[in-house]
Image (tube, rainbow, N blue to C red):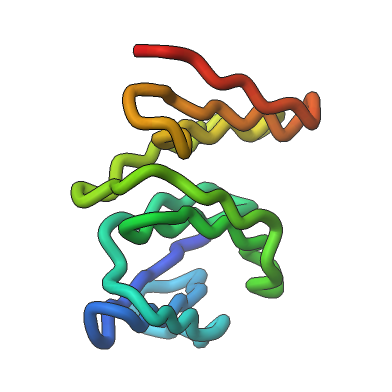
Length: 116
């Protein structure tokens, strides 16, 4: 038996997250509401990352508490990557400087910015 996470987009700026052990029975974990349009969402077992046009929010999946808020350069396509390995979480998104990538190494509590 596997845990199932379901994500429902209520509107362009409102997400509802559900947890289920069976596809027919789902319980709502919570809702995330934003003042901007949600461009991309990435999930892993312990976190959810949401890309908006000028920032990325990272939440703990257990209680939807805010883990990180990252400002980015203009990001109209919602570019965002999130590792799925269980050990260390790695997130990549545009930096505040156009043409640079910001890589968050959460296991090491380190930020790396590179020119692309």
